[in-house]
Image (cartoon, rainbow, N blue to C red; front, side):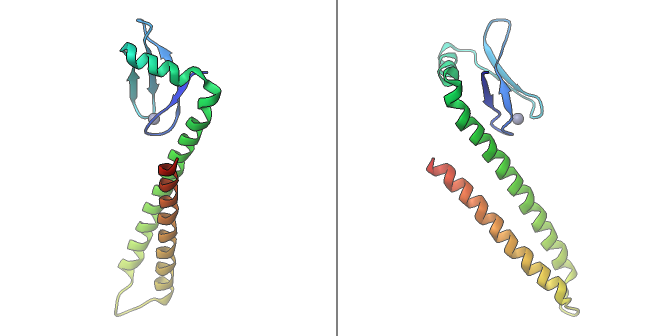
Length: 127
Ligand SMILES: [Zn+2]
């Protein structure tokens, strides 16, 4: 099967052919339509898709990475919101030690998430 990963969400996009026999790809969730109209691009695409077995590994790997990064970013946003909520509840007049501790734990978790994200992007650069 011939496919490309969506460059935004990483979904597997099957190669389609339009009425002029030109290849194109559609990602419905993202609303992306990718048309390859010139011979140069079509040639490059054919070369890219020729050995499907060889290409499947990096494509799958890249798609997994996209999902991994998205999941991390979602988690980072969630933890940040939790910290902000807790910090707004902690006042100098009434220090709730449980909330202070929870806040500190969340900050450590946030650091770890950033570290994880950094490792993925560094790995990507090294490849
Ligand atoms: Zn997409």
